[in-house]
Image (tube, rainbow, N blue to C red; front, side, top):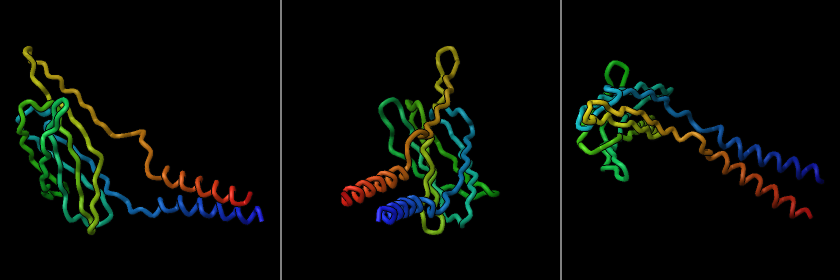
Length: 166
């Protein structure tokens, strides 16, 4: 009897983990900016190389200009498909912005995909002509995904079944 319950618990755990496997593949996005270290009030060209096994319907670039403690309203721009890549020219509008934050939104076969938000520090001219030009990319690494939720649920169900037996 104990073996049957352990087998059942194992099957439940495997089923919960298999829910994660059947997720469709997200597009792979490579974004480049020209210039790489833009200045406030300049024009920035974003180029996106998107690899996806399904048809891409729409591509949008959402960009925010920010300064310490404040981000301005986002600009949402449709990207044009030119020679196998998606392009968008963005004119930065705020002279006091210290960095920009941007994210791609891709519609493919009726489903929307977004990539992680990236930040780029703007090149601020100082009195002696040196710019800071630091690049900071917040990739969000180190955060657990939804699979931890399935693991916790499976452990909780296991404890309930073991306590019922006693």
